[in-house]
Length: 137
Image 1 (cartoon, helix red, strand yellow):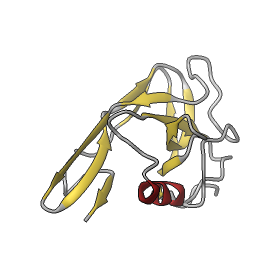
Image 2 (cartoon, helix red, strand yellow; image 1 turned 30 degrees about the horizontal axis):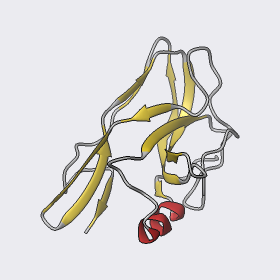
Image 3 (cartoon, one colour; image 1 turned 120 degrees about the horizontal axis):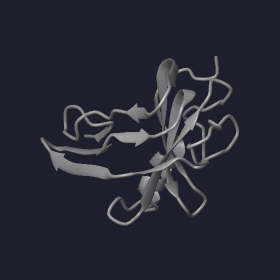
Image 4 (cartoon, helix red, strand yellow; image 1 turned 45 degrees about the horizontal axis):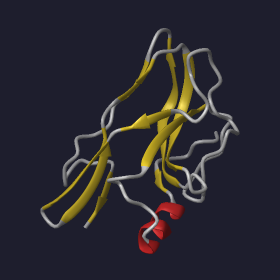
């Protein structure tokens, strides 16, 4: 199995320290992948290897709307739900910064292949200190 879990990518962690990410101005995208992709914490950047290929799905994925904040001594980042109008099967996703080498932010493992017949929606957790996709405390 190519996907083995959900990861905050090491490229994102080092990029935070170096000031390479600005969630007020950066374009953040989500690309979808089949089980043929190999993505993990060491994934450094967006790749087309194993990416979903289907009519209605654009290589590189969709642009995400960032939701962020700080509460209860925790900084958090999540995203608005994303829907792609296409029929395909995906096993996971890569969220990355578009441009400047397309550095990876995190890998999402859907747990199994997910198939859509008309539209595919990725539902993100609430943007809060307790639930957001990425939390730093």
